Length: 302
Length: 302
Image (cartoon, rainbow over all chains, first blue to last red; front, side, top):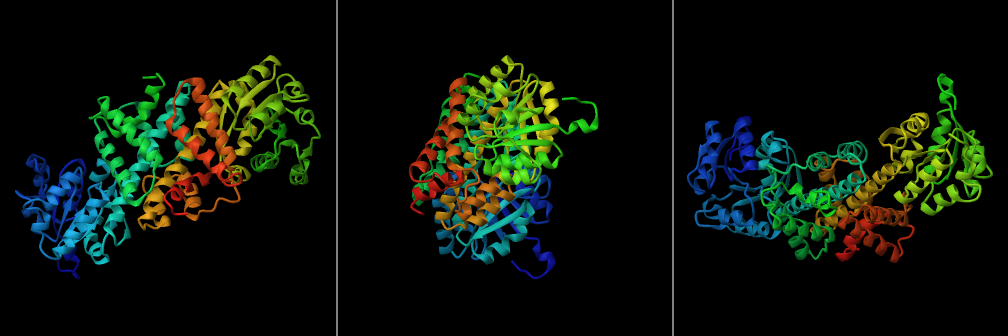
């Protein structure tokens, strides 16, 4: 990609994976003036974006013809297939072009992609994001980026378009994946512990909303307590903003990272069991915040 | 106490328990213009307050001659002795006078005090506080108050003097004690889970301070993450702002409340074991944030 002129900041970018998160991110890239080529396994999901000016790719290869290509997919399997499968990114990306991987994936897969892209003289950036679909649609995600500094610099106009802030933390891509996983572990911890605390105080007669107001106006005035505390106080877990099976997947990835790095994680282990129980009892379609309702259920309250 | 004149808002109040928290609270009562009579088992701790205008009581009874008396003591045993012992509050308080209990205590003891004060026609207010000693010294505590509405109203000038905000949540005093305990459980949960997350990312080479900046500027921008994240990143746990044995005590009280109310609390149970381990391994004098260093120790990092 040529640089040095203001207009050259408008890039040609592919986007693979148009779920709740990816659709919002691709829309913000379009709004910022980039030329966006979208691909999704189910093409119907691309229609709203095409109506707003995106070009529809009929194959992964077609989505790989620009300066860079994003992948925003549900799990390791999906990313592995898109990157390493026939006609995938490793086969399709030209030399020097950038794969921006925003999916929440294992650090093992991130390392494998780093090696494969390097072997094919392609560039690789891990750029997972924090934020729910509404933040993606509003361009208010937080990006945690890791990769070679030149790659981070060249991808900056794209990351700016989708985020309110980008944190560049390491030249090793997998560091960003690990920070993302650890963040989801911390969110799940907040959900579980808020669920335990609310089960306790509400069984003694304290109003859940009043309790939440105390928490969030004192030491716990963070978005994560407001968002998930509100979900727990209402007890509404459908439709899922982030579905429980994805929560289980992320806890499994956190524990797998702990395995690789030899870091015992007792609360993460406990949370994995909470997700397993939620799913075993029919929670497949619920928001992951529903693990926070298990404590009240245990206490005979639901 | 007479009401209805502006000057009558200046009350005559006793204060029992001049530790790091109580000294700050009593000083703020003095600053607000109330007449404060202080008592401490170790009288030397009263000297700075007496130099600022407090009257020294030589017995608990002497501290019980005003409109109200605060107790701010380390644990159930200390409160029990001061309230139910010979010459204690139950024997000393005149009819209609108010006991404001700010200590972090069991809901069982709070219920017992409620009954005893009612029997002696005294009034009782549970008013535990959130905040560390620096917040107490600055009058920036948060008070969670519960008791009869007339009692809350009459104590309001005193609570205003020590806090930035008072939340009145119930006419049952023990509800406030339970909210306080649950808050300390949530803080301990943040410490433990931050400790696990930091052990994981830092073993992969991510800088702890950079990691903390990401957390606190995204979803986790609450005072509790900043305060305890900073302690964990520095690894400094002495001198203790809140000592580990008090953390264990509070987790025990949370679990005891769970026992009484029949609410299983899996993370609280895990935290109790973390505190036991910290204390068993010589952590008696450390800040309770030191439980957050155990994950790194388990991972062979310390």
